[in-house]
Amino acid sequence: MQILIIEDEKRAASQLQRMLTASKFKYEVLDLLDTVEEAVSWFQKNKAPELVFMDIQLADGLSFEIFQKIEVDAPIIFTTAFDQYAIQAFKVNSVDYLLKPIQQEDLDNALSKFQKANKPAPIESSILKELLGSLQGTSKREGILVKAGNGFLQIKTAELLYCYSEDSVTFGVVSGKRYIINETIDELFDTLDQNNFYKINRGQIVSKTAIQKIDPYFNHRVKLSIANPRNQEFIVSRPKTSDFKEWMNR
Image 1 (spheres, rainbow, N blue to C red):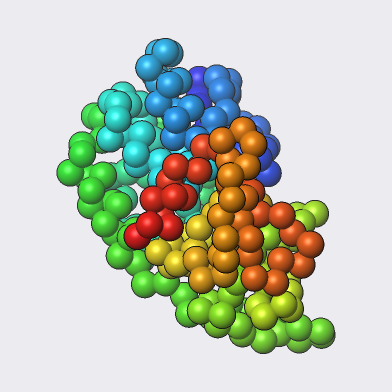
Image 2 (tube, rainbow, N blue to C red):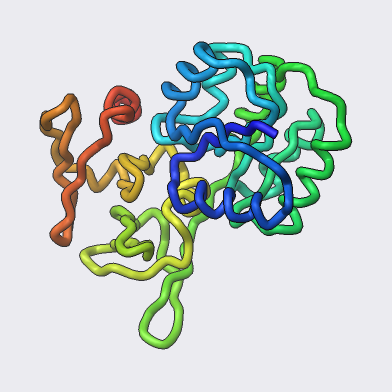
């Protein structure tokens, strides 16, 4: 079975491949992509795969944008960290999905469902709008449980300046203090209000209120001056620069 994986977090992509192997599902990975732009280009140049695993939040935007630009004639299994109640439209429209962190049993069930089903029709634009509206309409969390000494405390998302990943650990910074958050950057970002927070690259999320200055940077990127930077550099990745500027202008 030829599959395509569209996932912007390398660790998540590697874990998915290990779980596919453990499932005894015979597969061949045609390619591993991490942006909307790469996916659109790939589908334009290649024959549709037999199955696609697709993360919702990619390096340069939501994966639904792929379908708005081209027709994808392949079964899709979405992977997402969004709360289950926010994605009821997936079930309504018979679009399969796996909640992160993906469990082996859930993957095995999805693969079994795929093998038993007939090839689905291409996803309609009306369904995409419903899915996108469902996700964007999700109420966002107001607090985050973090480690504090031997215990825990809750910080308010409204006070969160930025988050970053370091040695596979996620940190959140509030008023110059940093706390360990027991979630990946992707999992955390999916639960935040994306009108106020932006994932500028694979390992950093910034609050709009924390951004003090934006300067040009080489290779068509931009560099941010952030409140209480704690020796961190904040560089918006090249695929996201244009979208980031639009986000800042809202």
